[in-house]
Image (cartoon, rainbow over all chains, first blue to last red; front, side):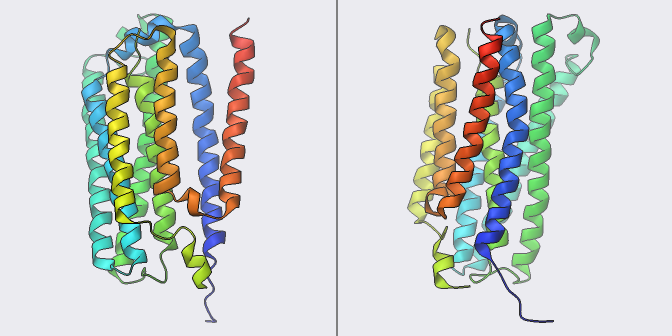
Length: 200
Length: 97
């Protein structure tokens, strides 16, 4: 094996390009949302009342806090404090799991109330209500998958930090994982008010 | 890896991260409180303004966009601009149909 080369700017640029493609993916869904919300404003308001603002707010705080521990974990690694970085990343993973746990509880309650795609009760509602929940399940579901993917990446990072493969000289993989995690947070920052906080 | 490379996007003071996090929590409380008041048609713009502010904080401090090479910011702005154009152009049709 020859000498290993690294290109931090190049690898971060690659990550950013991927993140921008994610932005466009969700952007398309946001566009769809905005058109339907404009067209069915009253229905969207009514449907939004069925969502729990408490769980939504809690999950926002959890994700924001996980972004903090993520950023602190990267900073710790850059300063050569690998053990601290490991624990902070572990806390980030735990917070991500709590977020998904809340999502699970939230969706289960909705299913019990007969609110899921193509549910008989839902189909008997106004068009705008059906569209609201269709978008809700699609967008928060896709976001949830992104959280899950992020958790997978972070667990891989934990293994790398634990084995000493990441350190103050080689931290870009953790930085890139962090960039992904923060972007998923930003998407939630928009999903939260758009679904949970619709006022009349 | 040269020292110049490690400087870019390097760690910010811990206090900066904590202050960013606290501001994000305050803004979340603000947007939840604002949603309890009826703003009429303006409420969506209040919510989006707060969300945009929170995103800028995450991008600037957590994602280090302010301290990265200029190309990162340029690419990000081009993408956001393109999305804005899509939405505005769509609404010139939807809103005045």
